[in-house]
Amino acid sequence: MHCLSAKSMASKPGLLTDWPWKHLGSFKYVVLAPWVVHSIYSYIVKDENERDLSNLLIFPLLLWRMLHNQIWITLSRYRTAKGNSRIVDKSIEFEQVDRERNWDDQIIFNGILYYLGNMALKGGSHLPIWRTEGVIIIILLHIGPVEFLYYWLHRALHHHYLYSRYHSHHHSSVVTEPITSVIHPFAEHIAYFILFAIPMLTVANTGTGSVASFAGYITYIDFMNNMGHCNFELIPKRLFSIFPPLKYLMYTPTFHSLHHTQFRTNYSLFVPFYDYIYGTTDKSTDALYETSLHRPEESPDVVHLTHLTTPESIYHMRLGFASLASKPLTSKWYLWLMWPLTLWSMMLTWIYGKTFVVERNIFNNLKLQTWAIPKYNVQYFINWQRESINSLIEEAILEAEERGTDVLSLGLLNQGEELNGNGELYIRRHPQLKVKVVDGSSLAVAVVLNSIPEGTTKLLLNAKLSKVAYSIAFALCQRGIQVATLHMDEYNKLKANLGTEAANNLVLSKICTQKIWLVGEGLTEEEQWEAPKGTLFIPISPFPPMKLRKDCFYYHTPAMLTPNYLENVDSCENWLPRRVMSAWRIAGIVHGLEGWNVNECGNSIFNVDQVWKASLRHGFLPLKMSMDSKPF
Image (cartoon, rainbow, N blue to C red; front, side, top):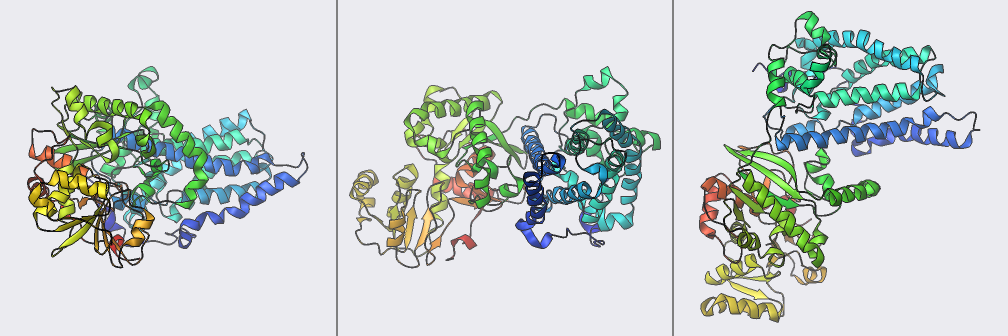
C-alpha cells in the first residue's frame, strides 16, 4: 500500500495554517454572535417589505450543517462498528480524534463569508425561495469549472512543497471519518471557498439566486464530502446498472477511500470524470467497490453489554460527539442548551427499543464489540422496568449466541443481583447456551485488592453488600486486615457470611478513624465529610462517588490500563481516562483470550488470583494513582 507518512511531511507548516480564532478555544463561536444578533434584530425592527429572510436564514443553515455532519458521524461510526460494507479495516485512535476536533471551524468561517456576501452583493440579499434558472446554472458550473479546477488544485496540493506545508494535515487520516473531509489548514479552506463560490457568485451577480439554490448547493457539498469519507460503501450497484454513465458523474466512498490509502490516484472532487480523462483512476477502484459492498456484518468473539447512564450520556458515547467521547464523561454546561435534542434522543431510544453496536476493537486476533441497551440508570431502579430490561439483555445474549460469540460480559447495572441474580437468570432459562456469560466480579475484586496500599492494617467498607463486597471483605479478613462497617445490619450480614475465623477481623465502627474507605455508588455527602483528612476513597462498584473533598484522595472505579496492541481505541469508557477499561469489561476479554469454558455469574465467583495473573499476562496493567486521585 503506497501511503506517504503525513506526520513526517507536516514539519513545515505554511502561511495561514492555523485558524484566526484558535486562541479562543471553546469560545470561538462568539465571532459569529455579532452577525447573528444583527440579522435577528434587523428582521424584527424593519418594515415587512424591507425584511431580508435570506439573511435571517443564514444562522439556521449553519445549524443545519452541523446537525447534518453529526448525523453522518454517528451513522459512519455505527456502520463501521457493525462491519458490513466497511472499506478500510485499520484503526482510528485518539490522535486522529484530537486532530479532527475543529471540524466546525469551516462552518464558522463560511458563516462569516455568507453574511458578508449577503451585505456586499446586490444579488445576495432579499432572495426568493426558488428560481429554476439559478439552480440549473449552479449545477452546470459545478460539474464544469468547479470540478475541473478542483482536480488540478488537488493535484497541485500533492506536490511536495504544498503537501508538506498544507495538505499532509488532511492525509494524516488514512482511515477516514465524515469530518475528515473538512480537516484542512485555514489557507486550504480559503482556496476551497473561492472555488465553491464560483457558482454562487455567478447566480448572485446575474440575479438568478435563491434560498433553495444556495442552501441546496451547500448541503450537496456537505453530503458528498461526508459520504466520500464515511468508510463504508452505501451506493447500490443497481444504480450504476440502471444508468451506466453515473459511474463518471458521481464518486463512491470506496473511490475516495483509495485516494487516502494509495495517495496519487482518484483526485476528483465528486465527479470522477476527470480522473478517467487524465488517467489517474486507481486500477483497484471497481474491485474494492465490489468487495466492500458485499462485506458481511462482523461476528465478534467477545461482546461487552453496557447501557446508557444519564440522558446526556448519548453524546459521550462513541456514536455521539467524537470530541466528548474521547474524554472521560463529565457534565458540560452547554449540553443543557441541547435539552430539546436530548429529549428527542431519549424518545428515539425508547421507541427503537433495541440493543445497538457502540464500538469495535481488536485484541490481537480477538474481535471485540461493545453493545448498548437503550435504557438509562434510573430505569434500572424502577420495578416495572425490570422485565423489559431483562428481555433486552436476554435478546442480546441470544443474538450473541446466534452469531457465534464466545463470551458476553455484563457491564454497569446489567448484572444487578435484584435484576437478574448477577446474570444467573439467563443461564437458568437457557442451560444449553454456548456463549459464556461473565459478570466480571472476580477481576473487580482483584483490582480493588491490589489497589489497597501495602501495609494497610485497617479500613472501612461503606458500600452496598454485593457479591463483590462480600468477596473483598472475606479476602481482607483472611489476610488479617481489620474491616470496619458503619451499620449494624451490614455488620451482621457480613459476619454471617465470612465464617468464624475471618469474622474475627470484622468490627462495627461508630467513629470513622480509618483513612482507607472502600465505597460504593451510594456514598452520601454526609458520610464523605465524616472521613478524616487525607482519606483514600477506593470505589468497588462501576460508578464513582462524587468528589467533594479537596483534602482527600479518590481512586478510579475498578479498572486497568489496556496494552498498546488493543486497537481502534478512540473513546473513553464512561468516566475512565483514555485507554483505561473497566474490570468488568476486561474480565470478558480475558475469558475469551484464555478460552475458559465456564460462566461467571450468580453467587459463584471465578478464581481471583487466576484472573488477575491472566490479565497481567495479556498486557493489562494496574492503574497508578492518577491526577484524579490527588487532592484538588
